[in-house]
Each structure stands twice: as C-alpha cells, then as structure tokens.
Image (cartoon, rainbow, N blue to C red):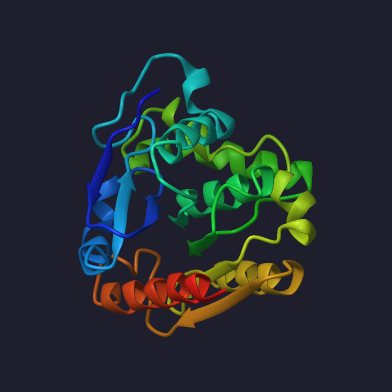
Length: 224
C-alpha cells in the first residue's frame, strides 16, 4: 500500500519509523532539528496516522510493512539512514537483516531483535493481540507487532549495516539488555544509554539529544 510520508528538509535522507499506536508525528521534534542538514521522511505505518487501514489482515504483517517501506525508499536518490522506535526499531532491524544493502545505517530506540524461542515468540504475540486496544489500534493492525520467525536473531551475526542502539535509562531494563546483545553480536553496532530517558524519549526533553546523536551517526557514515 502507499504509506503516508511527511517530508521536509534537504540533503542525505533519514527515514523515521514509529512505534505501535503512534504516528509519524512522534518524530516531529527530532525531524525539525535535522531538516537543516538532511532530507527527513517520517512514515505512517499501515493503519496508523494518515496511512490506509484496510480490512485485510495480510496488510498488517512484518513482511508487508517491509515491502511498503521498500516503496518509500524507492523514491529516494540513495540509501538512507533508517531510524526506528520500538516496533519501528524492530522493523528497521528486520529490514537490515533481509535487505543488507538498502540502508547506509540504522538507529534503533528502545527495541529488541525478537525471540529465537518459539514459546517466547508466541507469548509476545499473544500479549500483542490482547493489548491492541491499549495502543488504540484494531487487533488486525497489531499484527504488525507479531513475530512469526526469528529472522533478526538468526542473522544478527552477519548484519554488517552500521547500527546505533539507543536505550533509555529509565525504560524497562530489557531494552538496554537487548542493546547489549546487539552490540555484542553485530559486527558494527554500538549502544548508548541515555540517562533519564523513557520509552518515548525522542518526544520529550531528550529530543534534542536524540537528534544530535542521530546527526553525529549520519555524519560519521558520510566520512567512511
């Protein structure tokens, strides 16, 4: 499907993906600070913001969302940096795992690589379905959050895309733990823990800090 995209600025592209139940607007504060240096695109995932919300459940799978993201990237002049929060972070990881040359680098905030254990995956999936209403989305839209395999975990050691992992010091500790795992397993990953940062730290008083960290990461890629 054709996703709604908010575009601003000019320069090398950065594409932002939001979490479940949020929208492209969650990135407004960060995007505004980067638009003087970059072409910034904030994407509404399927069933969110101004993007379509079809009745077909097959529109709300991880792989369908990644294909929709491919269409967004096809409009760019070159590979972007992909930045994702929570669900968006997992999608960024899955995109890098399955399309290793599609992005120059990825930045993920308060997210993880999924689960290799089928029982843990099903536990996650059951909670995602059960809690869809808490995120303000229909259960079919929460399908974006379901994990049907362990593709990121299976490929993490071979994922050479430069990766920056941000975790909030005041968020649930498993996100910092996931970041430590990614830093340890991925060939080119680095973890930064932002003290006092919560789950949506890119929306609050940490927005400027998050923006400058992303800018520094992107600038480092330009120098390679």
